[in-house]
Image (cartoon, rainbow, N blue to C red):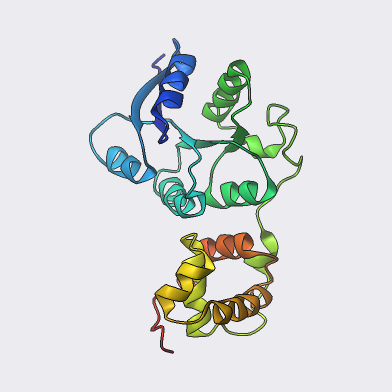
Length: 225
């Protein structure tokens, strides 16, 4: 039986080398180690090493990285993705589920539990289904944000509101959004309140998830509209 192949993604090289040492076994080999998710798709599309699993060390640009994760999971449906995070919280779980990941685990997990979790993913299991290996901090029944995704819009989004949602999907703070869209930060906050109300979202993280799942409704629009 051939070994399963893993791509390890993370900016912390020392942590990555430690993971390589922990995970390498008779059944699993680390085929590639890269710093950023943007490097993964070219590897998968090339004639380079195949991959059965991706382990992603969560970066500070997690919301933006979720777009890359979703692109990977949509194009390569057979590859499992497990995210390792410093902290497991509901906002992170929501984004992980929306991006198509199979698991969202704390870095405090033991090496034995991590190996077993990855084995489950390789067998086609989804760690979000409530396996005991997921950290105790994780809610038992974490689900995607169905409310913002499935309920109809209360009223159409304006071009400005769509532009702001695009910025939220990229993980931009209000100050940067204001600069990019040439408006006052207070105006951004007003538009953001309207956006959250229209898409039935409770916060900007939920709004980013909604934007990721409704990209066809967020085509590029002129900011002056």
